[in-house]
Image (cartoon, rainbow, N blue to C red):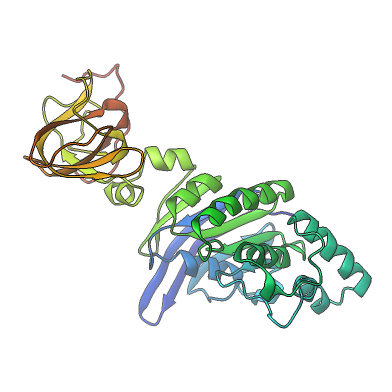
Length: 346
């Protein structure tokens, strides 16, 4: 299977008088897995459809390898797309669904049968050729939709929230299966998702989008630990923000705000050095299965933390966050780099 790099240069899309995508510039390495991540309405699906050729550009260029795709119709781009709805034909068998793209391309019956069998083996569905797609589970239907895209050996695979219609257990399982298959084939892949956990687990790089623009492009760990700004941090699960106090750890010299995740904050544990500390009254304590989620009313804000034991509402509590879990932001709400310990912090 061939694979090629994808390059987007100043890709812009308008819908009427509204700008949906604004000057998107992105490089996708051959054989890599990229996730377009963001809330509903951020433009991620529009960007995927623009790459596929279903949405015309107002300006910019899309290149796949050495070829310009910008003005080509979808059927000439040689890309493959898997839709959220599966889009399988219910009157066709599994083999007929898989082989239909090959039939359209004039591939002989015997060769179609060979490729269908090989694809089903890859999908761990060998022997399902004559099964009606209406008899398949949701996870099996999604595999067939994926196989139908891959059977034409496309240089680029586009996935539009392909797992969103599945229940949580099947979704987790298929994440791993899809990633393993993508790696084994080495196909350049771009997937749209609004699920940060899905993106973090599957992607080589994540494109975080907001209001038609790219906020940040980074590897999963870098994105999670160093979000570009407070808005990105909140989307990525940073559900606590506090104003920096003089006694707080000096994580970054220009920091005015710290962000941290609830899971990193603890209640009424032994005092630790180099930790952010806030005190207040417990508003609520809710059991979560692996502990308790605690809400505390402090002087500055309502904050959230975890506790190994139940804490009665109305009681006094001390919240602590280790220095390593604090994410510093400057006066413009932009993320600040960690403090250089050699600089003067006086």
